[in-house]
Length: 163
Image (cartoon, rainbow, N blue to C red; front, side, top):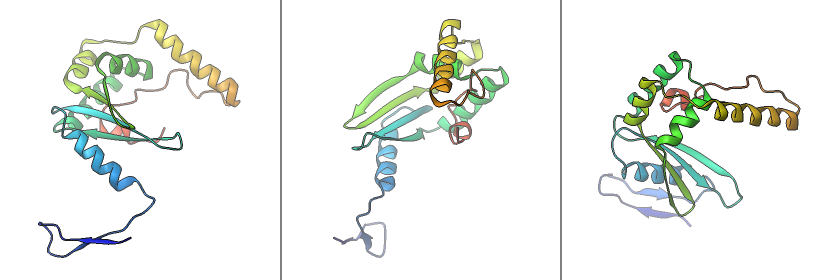
C-alpha cells in the first residue's frame, strides 16, 4: 500500500512505500533515543531482530563526537587496547531497553577522566580476553592476529572502522 502525506515543512506530498529495509526506521529510532540523553554521551544501540540477529547503531548527543574522538586519541597514544576499553566502558555503562532495542549509554566526561588518570584493565581481565581469543582461534582454525586487539573507540573515527 502506498500512502501520500503532506508534511507542514514540505511543499509537495511525500510518498511512503513499504520496504524490507529497516534502516530508515532504525535511524529515526536512534535519533529519538539520542534526544533523551545528556550532552556528551556515546550511545551503542542494539536492534534485536526477529531472526535472532542484531543490528548495531552508534549515536552521539551534542558534543559527543568530538569528545569521543579526543578520548580515542588519548587512549591510542597511551597504548590502550580492547581489554582497557572493556574495563573503562563497563565502569560507566548505563543499559536500558525499549522493546527489542537495547541502549548502552556512556557519559563521556567520566570516560575521559579515566583515560586521563590512567585507569587500565586488571591483568586477570586482560588474560581473560586473551583466553577467549585463543579459544576462538582453536574453534575456527584461524589464530588471532593479536592476542589483545586495539582500543575499540568512543568516537566516530574508530567506531566506523571495519573490524
